[in-house]
Length: 204
DNA sequence: CTTGCAGGGGCACTTACATCA
DNA sequence: TATGATGTAAGTGCCCCTGCA
Image 1 (cartoon, chains in turn green, purple, orange):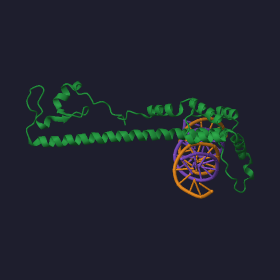
Image 2 (cartoon, chains in turn yellow, green, red; image 1 turned 60 degrees about the vertical axis):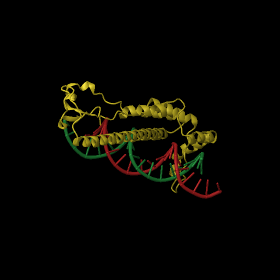
Image 3 (cartoon, rainbow, N blue to C red; image 1 turned 135 degrees about the vertical axis):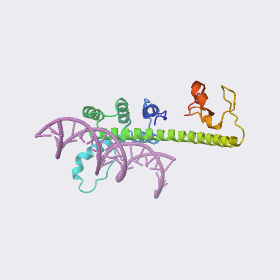
């Protein structure tokens, strides 16, 4: 759809800038509080959790699926690395995991979820944009309908549009809707001086 | 050159858990 | 204290790509 001024790429930009490019990662308020709470104990918690996979063989029953909470520092480093690259090659993954004292799989999962969150955010913004666009189109439609009504009313009376060349009233059949400025005009005018018809200021 | 297969990575969807209001 | 909402780590299954025989 060529009409859409906001291509996905430009949207991606607007999304990535406010949400994820600031030096302190933009976290939901709940996460910030979580991190504060976790500050001390989470360190051992996630170590325990990260070792869980190794002992999953002992899980012939059902082991309680403990949930790892990343520390503030781990999140910060992951975010930083995500800003540089949205995907990691195996080497980068391994080295980042080592740096963070996590398993490569955990780093991989974090990046997967991070990409998903990023995409979700973008979709939400696109949705917002489309809603606004829909609103403006609805308004435009109302305007055009009013104009059609006016034209219908004019049809019973004498034509009021005069030719710019002859100053004579134009027959209704020679009238047309300018697609750019969305006003009724004569076909001849449109063809002879298209520059005089500027589109209205672009909405959103 | 083509084809079938295995392995790996990414993604969509989902679940399970932690936290908060 | 109980509970519903929310955020997110992790599981699962599917698809696509690549390398190889």
